[in-house]
Length: 148
Image (cartoon, rainbow, N blue to C red; front, side, top):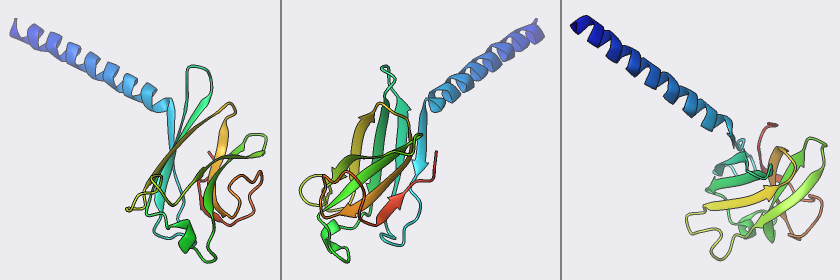
C-alpha cells in the first residue's frame, strides 16, 4: 500500500512540475527581452528592451536604462535622446524621446520608456539629437540592440 501511495504522489508531483514548466515557457515566449549592446559613446549605460504582443496584435515596447549620461553633458551637447525603431521592412521610425531634465531621467540617471507599435520591431536604438521631433536620425547611435 505504501509503495502505490508514494508512486501516486510522485506522479502527481511530476505532472504538476511539468505543467508549471510549460506555463513558464509559454509566458516567457510571449515577451522578448533584448539587452542594449555596450557603447563607446555612453560606456556606463546599461539597459534592455522588452517587446511583447498585446491583445490587439500591437507590440508593446518597454525600455529600462541606467547610468545614461545627461544629454547636455555629451560632447558635443545635445537637446534630447531619441528612441528609434527599425521594422521588418527596414523602415526607421522615431518612437519617442527621453529628456535628461525633469522627472524622466532621475538623479540616478535611470529611465523607463514605454510605447506601442502596430508593426513588429527588429532593432531598437537611441541617438542624441538637437531636434527631438526629427523624422530621421542625424545623431550618433548611443545605444543599440542587436537585431531580433
